[in-house]
Image: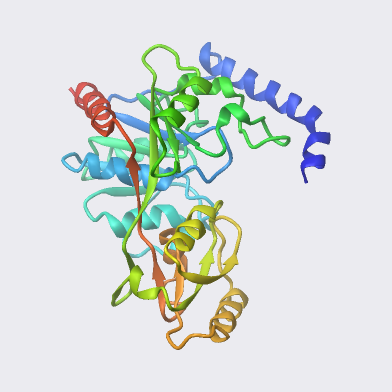
Length: 343
């Protein structure tokens, strides 16, 4: 695979040139950008998937709990088109897994999907509960909207400064795109990452004026959550679990389970996978051969919204984004932007 990617390097040069010209046209005003008067925060990355956008969006939702918040996503792999304001009548296939997760988890916010973010924002602004803040999910490259604040995420073990553009690497655009960010967050760090190791990363990521760099990790819950019960992780150390994932990077979850001395068998599916009836039968079969009396399926929260109601003994492990240091500075920067932009 690495050899093939290396051989595709000439295509990467062409791809990089195309994205650079596109960005130049937006920067110089040749391509139109639409601005809005209310605070809009865009969360995204330079690389393809797996940087922890969902827990970062959820962190912002909690931080802005005193505001009327709306999230706007494109609804990746949904089977509908156009603008949808998610309600009780919608199912995950119609809106996408991440938006459905937001909708089920946060009852006091608006959750919408639209591939055309400009139209999506306009539609949100004419709803009865007009939002005071809009969070754009995975919108760093969606430059038709000019957000007021940009948060760029990059994984600790896969920094954008060490990567190349597609198809040789995993970057959607050149590393120079990071200059558009107001804040860069290095995600999925080891929880015990030392100040010395953080400094090494700081030295690798060049910051421009007013940019700030933060470090975060994934904070796992002590409990698995099911439809009708919660189970403490420490009670599962003598049992074997079936772990089912359909996310870009399940490595962090698997490593965490291993540190908890939990035995598991893993079934991996592509990111945002729509589980078919054939998939369900395979999962049930694999569950049946586990050498344990209490047979349980553990998945991510994002996968849970796609599997809920289709499998028995299904649980998910909640996660949150947690800042290693300087959490107060991050919070203050966001709250100040929202307050000043909302005036």
